[in-house]
Amino acid sequence: MSQAEKPAPTTVPAPATVSAPATIRARFESKFPRGLIIRLVAYLFVGHLFAFFVYLLFVLGGQNQ
Image (cartoon, rainbow, N blue to C red; front, side, top):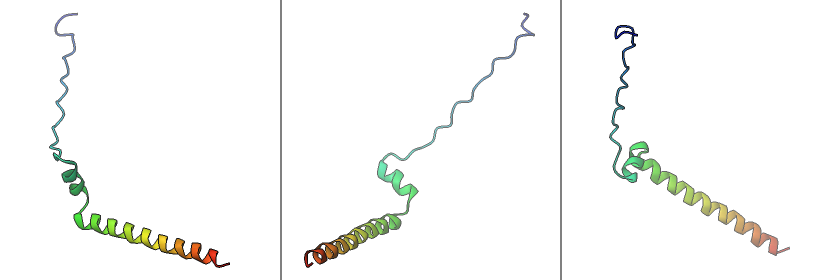
């Protein structure tokens, strides 16, 4: 094969560097607003507190029989 018949080497472009946040907290806050996180934690806490209260009602109500 002569030089003219050889296919030209293909060059692969270098991947673009993405500037990732340095810390986990910065990356987490960049995805979710801070108010959403606070509300989520509050709802989870209150929901579990309510579930515990209902469970306690059933346990105490079952002992009275």
